[in-house]
Image (cartoon, rainbow, N blue to C red; front, side, top):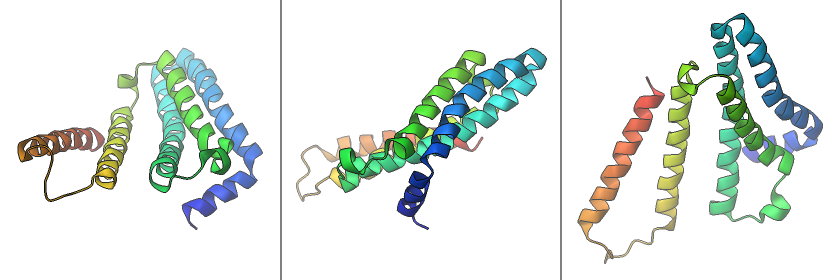
Length: 167
């Protein structure tokens, strides 16, 4: 099954997708506040689960939408299914916002790794976009020192994100 086939399959079940991605932020806040009354450790565990359930599909759909926009250059007005493509992103943002109102992200287990994953995905897209848009000629318009400094900064950012991901 390809990613396109998966998206088409999800589009057949729009009502279930809507219910799931709308209920996730609501359940995050309601259950997090309820568990917070009982135990802060239980609340942080619930928030970690809810954040992972929201962020992984959100990151995947962000990658798909940016890929469609930048590399494939599809017409987003005709090819973009709002429920399947944008609702996971909105649900991710809402879940992260509501979870941040209940507990700081530093206290949520595993959030630093998830943040490292987001940074690595972003850096990967920046690198692929740079390679995709660069027209390499024999004559480079800037000096090679600037190119090496840019490459070094990219590697430092990459290592910091990887270190945060694999703690």
